[in-house]
Image (tube, rainbow, N blue to C red; front, side, top):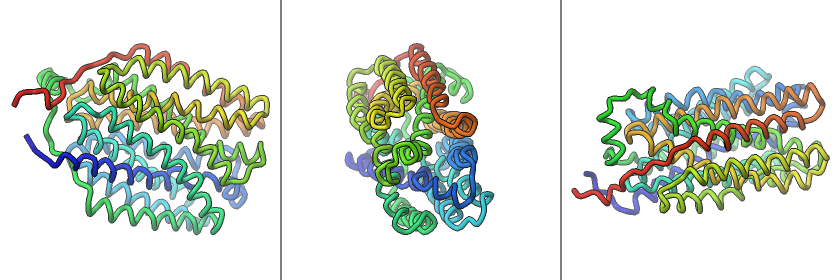
Length: 411
């Protein structure tokens, strides 16, 4: 059994957190300039939505393989490759002369984004899961959505507004290069000790990786992430534009209010991650989170239909409270339901499905709906229905598991 400095896992958590914050530059850091980009390249709403969707599609295709490879090759290497890909994509996007290369830059960024979502989350779980504290670790990590989104949609937006989207995107590539150096020097993989309890029982069962990926809690987590990431993608790609076009807000203010969706959600992410760790149960909180998401998203949709953008902005963070209550718990429950050696694969599968279906389909179809109907309301109604099914109904079928903490086992 490996022994490490007790503070090491917190240092690794902090470094993983930094990497995730940086990941939001190539993921959504460009979206506040979507109107300027659309005007420069004469894009339709569907083409504009595809800029965000292609990143999620490529990232989602990469994620499952990244988890499996990371389990065998080392999570640190996955993270470094991800940052390098994000830098290349960011710079190509900044200098693209036409829509084809613009899309290629977003696609290469998607490779980086996919690797940079599965890598840091798996790094955090690997350092904390042996003590059965993955709930608090993932709760902390998911607050990066709030900080990262606020950074990308507000702080980085100020840069884009000041110097233009092309120069600003190149600056973003430079920031990613700095993070690459920090990660290369200080980040390290967790010791490869399998946790007792479920892990040994799972290994003895002889079940294949595919059978574990298709197990109940993993599929329910994947469904939750489809609904969650679909909402996040729409908020990140389209909400600044909706507030700029509909309410006449300037890009920085629209970006700030759009980021409140995840900033407010940070509160529940940490609190309920810790509570569920101590309770040893996660299902009830996941179900409650899905219900809250559905109710508040329905209220937001009615406000959008009424043209009341102040209420839209107010209901948005309430949706985030539900999302960030359930998201870390759904992923933690999936990770605790499989052998420790398969956690990276499970994280990649769950996050990848969320990216491919939610991250790709939602923003693209909203653009198609906008082109067809002239507004966004029908698309949001469809999101409410999907949220009810994926985040509430599916969660009712989850099953709590209990893994024995490592420190409780005699050695």
